[in-house]
Length: 528
Image (tube, rainbow, N blue to C red; front, side, top):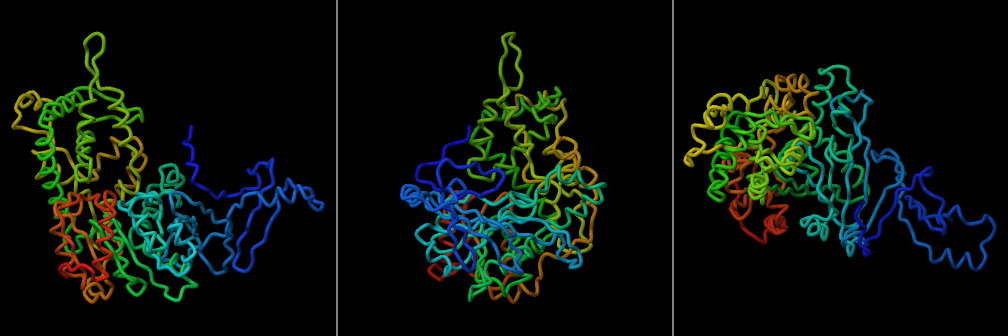
């Protein structure tokens, strides 16, 4: 059953005429438009003038705060805007009807993009005068964070925080296998995917900004981006710098001047170092991991999702090694991996298999478009670079045959390396949820007519205050490439730290507080 809301929470309901039950008690509904506020009586009240008792009953009935979107020439979807108060935050949910293809004005095809505004309850009376901060999630392909995340509470005391579900994620028009199955051919699927990179996300943001800030004297807003969200911010700085007050990046300065091959080569070396660190922390897992790998190599293991758990899929657990708590999570899985049956036979436990099955729930955008986020302009195709390197210069470190396990099973000096944030061509075979997109993914991997994402000339004369947290040993966005890219962004201030992992923004709201202070000149850090 669903969890009960805490007694301190209040919630605004989206009223649908055919779904709203006839209430036993009257309710009062305030409908807010731009020009008036009307009090509507519950349909349970008699049409005649209310008696004193019914009047008294009406005066104590609760309000449901429903704002009606009536602005003309707006991208905001007409209808009720749901709002609610919880954990000291006031939220409002917006849905925007935006062009699928921003580069083709004649196309009338639209998608829905969702965004949630959050402001501290004690500041809601002042929200019309407060500046805006839009957040870009990491990914690509992941929805915005929960509204009550630690850093959101901090930011909501000084900003109208807008938590964006980037196109294709969360409550925006879904990019799911079911939705993509409506296209007749893999080519049509691929052409649809092409509209879901950072350039389209930024153009969505501009239309949203023009809509929400239309009545503000200052029509600029600030940006915050985590990981891939920082890539989006760098694209925004290239395309619409005049719309930005300030920008804050956490673990997400893109490798503007480096090739995809260089990025992944560095990534493989980084995950190898993190794997060695993992075994140093949990030395007994050296044998546990070998045992799991050998079992998977010798047995066909079917997951609850219908997918096959292969050794290479198990190795992908290393993707979490660069996040706070990631190594501990993998260690717990290794401890729970096997169960001994009554006949003494060992097999993989249901706990382990269910957890591995959950790893299969990977967003299509993340799997299929991940390498393309590094393709900056025409003439660049991803061509499954991670797979090419794995099968080439890194093969001896990551690829094992069943025969090899016997040779080094008892040799603790030989270890099984985990892989990191790499998308492989074989995932379209091993992952049941992705297999329908195999031909589409192949088309995108060979596509080389991508539009530019960054403008080095615009970045070189940047005037927007930018502060970036660069994590010294970041496994996902290499510090060395971030520093190199920062040299091409005029005025950007780097805070290079080994205090936090890639998940620093989520782990400690102090990360954002420090970036605020850097931009406001309360703290001095080197300027690139």
